Amino acid sequence: MQKAIYTTVGIDELLSHVQALKGVGARFVQMHAERNVDDGTYRLVYTFINVHAAQEHIAQDGSYAIENLVVEGIDRYQEIPSISSYYPAVFPFENEVHDLFGLAITDMQIDFKGFFYQVSTAEPMSVITPEVKAAREKAMKVRAAAEAKARKAAAEKAAAAAAAAGEGAASAAAAQPAAAAGSDAQHDEAAAKAALKAAEMEAKLAAMDPEKAAKVRAALAAKAVRDKQKKEA
Amino acid sequence: MAHRSVIPFGPQHPVLPEPLHLDLVIEDDRVIEAIPQIGFVHRGLEKLTEKRDMHQFGYIAERICGICAVGHSCGYASACERMLDIEVPGRVQYIRTILHELSRIHSHLLWLGLLADAFGFEALFYRSWTLREQILKIFESTCGGRVILSINEIGGLKHDIEDSELAGIVQTLDAMRPDYDALVHTFLDDDSCGERLHGVGVISKKDALELSMVGPFGRASGVNYDVRMFGDGAYADLAAFEPIVATDGDCYARCQVRCAEVTQAMDIIKELVGKIPHDGIGGRTKLTPADGARGEVVIEQPRGEAYYYVRGNGTKNLDRFRVRTPTSQNLAGLTHALQGVLLANVPMIILTIDPCISCTER
Image (cartoon, rainbow over all chains, first blue to last red; front, side, top):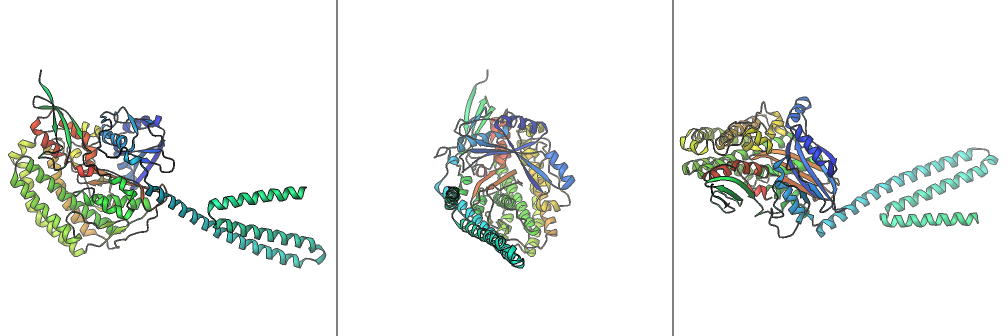
């Protein structure tokens, strides 16, 4: 069974990690780049397999690991050191990352200086198409709606529990002697009503668009502050 | 002092079915340095995940290459299944492995034919491809296509291959065996073949490891590495598996390794057909990868280790698909193998790495 291990490293630590992997006899498998659509940065993934260690693990528990070094948050044109002095087979991939993503890899053993691929669009893999943006935004909205639905269900459950607690408190108060119960029962009833109202409002907010819900929350908070100031005055 | 000049080799050349360019720096008729260049037919298939959803992209992944189509299809489906945390039934794994091994046989027979053609042995070329035709007929009768089978999908198979059909595959392979043995005898024991292959394009084991060479190209130099030995999927149920390794590191050793791998693949298929479980063929699943979910897999393609990586972004499309094919990994080895050889042997050496430019230009 294959497992994957991802270790996030900084650009300045990359070569020392690669050197360590080379030292233990790990095979170089590949490297590739990815673009983060959300923040526009890049990620590099270097993959290795330590065949000897893999065979030992397979003998022990039947599984082995593909080891990945991940460099996150790379800005465009930030210099990335080449690992070709340790693993010469990386040269096609480093040139590819340069030509297709526009990332600057320094000290490549075989450097095609941007002429490895004949591309009609410069750095094509760095382009985020409108389709991708639209699909991404749609997915985020769907996810937000699903979360809102889950919150609404949770709020309704909480409201039902609060209502049940309110009824319980009211019946308990009715069982007390009338003189002692007067003010306490009223207080409990008011508290239960307030809890019910708050739960209903929370359920309404949960069903709203997140941006609108945030505005309503802000308005309610401002109203609460104004009411408090009025009372104090 | 010898005269030094640069000869452009390719991208169009009789020995190359696909465009690959080499700048050969030669001194008299000996190659001093070779610098490869690809990218003439780069198709940007990895970018296409933005426009095709995960199921649709399975068809594109299969079309990365016409020879390794089954392997690409299996690798892509497995990587997606790993990302989605789907466990496919045992029968699916067995059928995928059987088809993949058949594809190895057809790929190696195709290569043997091209090799024979390269050193001018036309009759041997015909015989190799006649045998290969029988594998293509198996594909056609079981899946309906000779090259693109389209049987895999994420989560299982589109259709089953009946036990009777599997038994028919074994019968065909058994019937091929005597002809194949005679073919191998010619390749490995005939003097005219041996003279062109022995001692040509030698790479030592040390260099092969240093250059991260994969597949029969690496194993011919003594690199004891074949992804199948890790026992993933149906390979785990094999009674024994040992990579085929040679030590000479020359063109002859590469031929020797591929010849033995065909026999090994036939044995694997026979064993798996005898053990195949009947637990269903899975089916298409709902695609809901979490944002940032990843799946990766390495498989042993006919040309060597291939790597597949997928990353989801919460939509039906993948955020990133990556395939690293064996040929792109072996380019460094190719340049090394060409250093110091006679110019006349360059086509032979290029052929013995079995370059697949379609795969490389995905």
